[in-house]
Amino acid sequence: MEQSQTGCICFCCLVGTSWLKKGYGSKPGQKIPPLIWIVTLLVCSDESEGKMKALLLAVFVLSVAATGVSAGVCGYQFVWRNNNMTCPDEEGVVCADVFDHVRNWYNGTTCPEKRVLHNCMCPGNTVCPVRDDSHRLWASSRHARFMCQPACTLPWCADLSNVYAMTTVQRSPQSSSNTSSSISSSCCCRSSSNTSRSSSSSSSSSSSSSSSSVVVVVLVVAVVEVVEVVAVVEVVEVVVVVVVVIVLVVVVAVVIVVVVVVVVVVVVVVEVVVIVVVVVEAAAILVVVVVVVVVVVSVEVVVVIVVVVVAVVVIVVVVVGAAATIVVVVVFVVVVVVVVSSSSSSSSSSSSNSSYLRC
Image 1 (cartoon, rainbow, N blue to C red):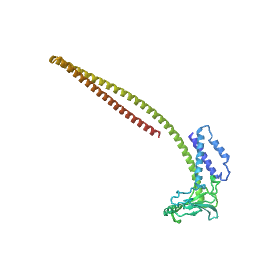
Image 2: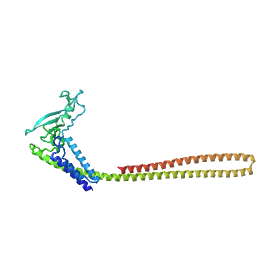
Image 3: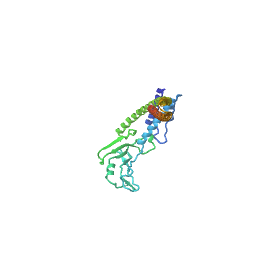
């Protein structure tokens, strides 16, 4: 399946490259021969969905490549502006100027040429004075000259008359130094009047672009297949992580409930035991005191002592009960805080792990 998809893509790329080399579509209104599309569909048509997807991908890549190349050499010029920060405060001032003129080549061929100088232009196509020397120094640090190449046509630039294939960049205020020229490798010159440099550059660039287009398409298909496999693995990992997080949350909740119930029961039992012990001790002391008083002193003194002892016992019981209640509340709060903090930390760690797996 994968080998057939790769073969289909390579065939589509070769067909597209041969179409570009032969210049189909170089004239206005000229269309791609129907035979090419018929052969392509016969080779790439199959019952499998993968080949159709590969065909669509190849067509998309070729369209994107053609669009990118046309934006670079089909006459679309981007003019630099700096919001007139260093130009005079006047209406209609533009911090860029573009000069058009006709270039006369050594062999008698003429074609238009553009040059961008980055000056302050006032209304009426006049050069304005700048505020200070900073603008002049900055503007003169980069001068771009878009030079035309004679008889240079492209299939996707057929409806445009000005095709700028050569770019000269000046990076110095002096026009005689620090100048670099570059010929666009996408321009395929087929005229006999061109220089040997242009012909060799065009032939090498066309062959390199053909091989590079095939390599790019094959790499894109490989990346798509890898992305699909990785996507399936990531979905499985996310499902596993979600299940693990849910199980951990349920277990932590059950543990919290059990711990809280056990703590409450233990505290209540301890409080009851303490109260019983205090009451028993107070009763024993009361009995001893009553016996001693009956033997030694009168009945009135016994009554007074009994009342005092009972009051003391009641006070002790109340104080102990209050203290036990306070202890219960404090222990309960501490346990809940500890359990909640531990559960939150575990859930945060699990969530961080899940996000890491999703990435």
